[in-house]
Image 1: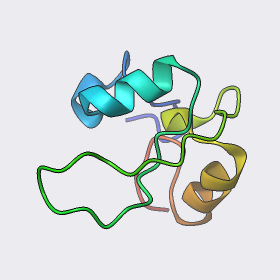
Image 2: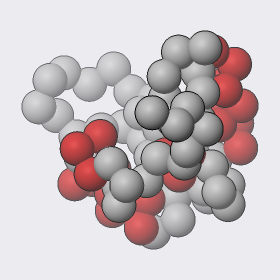
Image 3: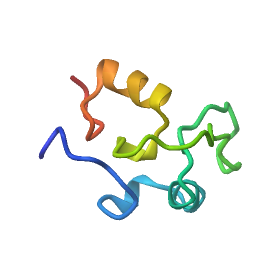
Image 4: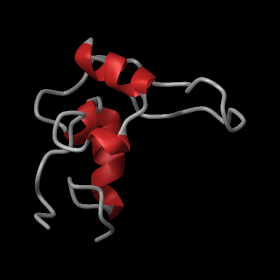
Length: 76
């Protein structure tokens, strides 16, 4: 597994919900910020995605991800 690969709905479709993929395709951050119950819609950031960021995250959420994880999502 390449820890530095960029994760998208097209490289790893099983890691994205339909709503997250739609946000990604619209160029919006799909990082879940909510505390919704199981089965409810995600509460996503929806700021503009940072170009080339794994998961289509905005710059703030990409920085938070990279503090403890590789771009591919595995822990450091």
